[in-house]
Image (cartoon, rainbow, N blue to C red):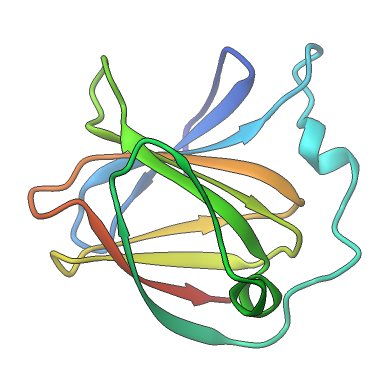
Amino acid sequence: MAQSFEYGSVQWKKAVSSRGVEYEVGTAVDGAGAAGAAVAQSAAQGDDAFDIPVHWTVENKWITLPEDFQKTTGILKYFFGDAGTGPFQYTFRFVIDKVYSYTFGMADGDSYKIHVFSVGEHFMRLNTDGSPVIVRVAGP
């Protein structure tokens, strides 16, 4: 069972990658601690499966995605950057308008899953032994 805890305005849950590497997934919370993004569930549930090759590198800035990618995946934009201090090397954030169970595949062959139940911004903190490049996005 995933362990859950709050830090700042994000509720974090521990998870394990396909290769056994621990990472954390986060959801924005309001001041009362309730998942703020969960208050408004998505009207557009993601139904169609997809598996799309990408080449997302650590750029430390927000990247808005092309409209056709947005329509297929529900991912509007992402941020992939250095985590700074703490136990994780990288932070990955993305904003969605459809709910899916997303899988992000890395260049080293590992993959990280995040199950989202609400629209809005979602977070992931991770480490990788290989090149920090996301090479595929799949769902649901």
